[in-house]
Length: 310
Image (tube, rainbow, N blue to C red; front, side, top):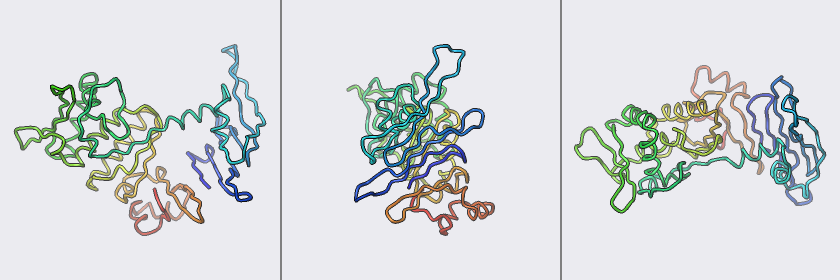
């Protein structure tokens, strides 16, 4: 059973089970609170049968759209309705939800790839593995200099001595990065820069807006970082989410990272009997009480969060 919620009224629930030896979707529910506080069921299915809310825009812009609950039956009970219905339903809320899910942008930077030169291209977003970091950094320098200077201002606060980054075009057309340390006359090329410096610079570039979606997932960003960097990284992620009105999901195995998040931002996964459940830390009264005097990472280390993963 999987449960994800943003508050007490807006939720998505999916329950997977077995019937006669076959995998089935026992329950699939999406409810959303509208502008006047009324909770609407956008989608409610069980074993391939259910209802979906279809929103039909009015031809008259002064009139509200028409909302209709429609009965649907899927071809098979093992199919997710939000995926199946989005393929043929027009002007349907489910299509919008499915579109948002499809736009999920997952980032898992590999330091070895971050160090590689880039080639100039038409891409305006950072690739999920960071392989075009040098190209995007040069794009940022050439066309968004104010944002690039903001990144440079942050680097020495968190990465001692690094105060300048250049994206240079070589004779063979590649783009390389060079990092200037105040203790050395000549800048360092990427192979001589620490893993943490490379990744922190990559995350600052990413969070300056170089990803294509408002639904961003970061895979274990704590890798290669000193634990003292965690509060700054969490703060950068939080500010970015607020400024872009985006949702950012972060998977982590770092108690130091968890130390820096707020109680209502923390969800953890519990796996039992072959099923995984996502729980909100804020729903646990014991955790809420202990969090008043203890960090969330400490609670995790001491097994107050019964989490397999966060």
